[in-house]
Length: 356
Image (cartoon, rainbow, N blue to C red):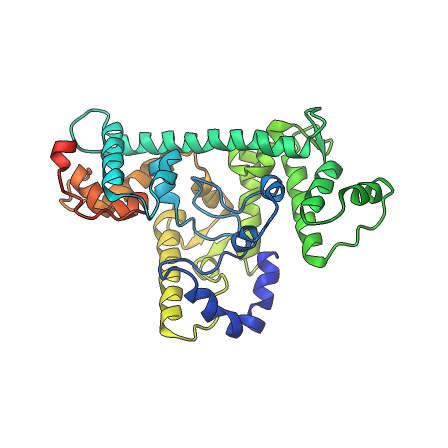
């Protein structure tokens, strides 16, 4: 379901589902990410492989315009994120965090500067890029079984619909004969969106055929400047209410909120709006004119923008910099471990100096 269509239907069912939906999520979580929730329900591994993800590691916004709540952890931990699970052993996590601190602290002065953090963020972002490349090889093989190194839009469409439960041979025959596929409205909308994205990923000369590199841009637009522009255009289109191709603060915080029917749900709404407002005013709106242009949003979304990485480093340091010296000591990172790793360490100072 597209965000625009979802927004139009929201008032009709919010009173029935909002409270149940919010209570099913963590109090600190954002309002429901509809496309992410839908993806979690997919039973087919193949569909997960070939459908472009809503969430992109190391990118600040989801494809549907929600803030990436895991961004700080992704750019601090990189591929080590999975090691910091909620039920993992605190002492093990503490030792791993101390090890990471030592790697970030390149000059070995037992503190992390903004420049050191910036360098680390860029390195972890590159890790996510390389992981996406590896995953893309698997995904490309799923839609290119004959191994000729090229996939047409029709070949992809057959595989996609097969992953949705349609008979693959029947779909292939109907497409070959240019017959109506008779898919439901939501699937048709998804196909139209994917087709537009497919053509955008098709490098000149346009032939509607993607090689492995172009398919990577299709699944992971953060790897291509042209596709990054397309991703920004899609997000602005969904949020822009007056059609001027720019975003005001009210438009940026106007994703479906509904009417909270209890205090807990209202608190979630309020927290979410507050986070988006802060991000809009302090980070995305670079010239602070209360308007976000596509160019500003594109710079904000670019995961390999070194200026953004430095700003992010400064923000991350500010969160835990209790002694206000503009650097991070080990004790500060351990004390704010939940911010950096998603894992709260108990007795964070125990044996720190011995372990370090």
